[in-house]
Image (cartoon, rainbow, N blue to C red):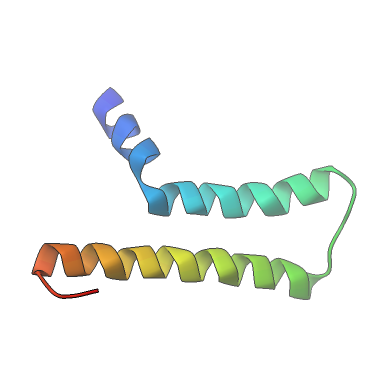
Length: 66
């Protein structure tokens, strides 16, 4: 169980997902609401980074070039 948690905390994709969610939640809790378009922009940015990391990781395992 602890090994699984340790692996999650070492995962760049997991950490980027957490950072994206925390960005949106912290903004709402701090009372500085941003528009839905800006929230979507933040989520698209983090999603793009996660997809890029996934592509990079996939190329490492298949032996392709990134």
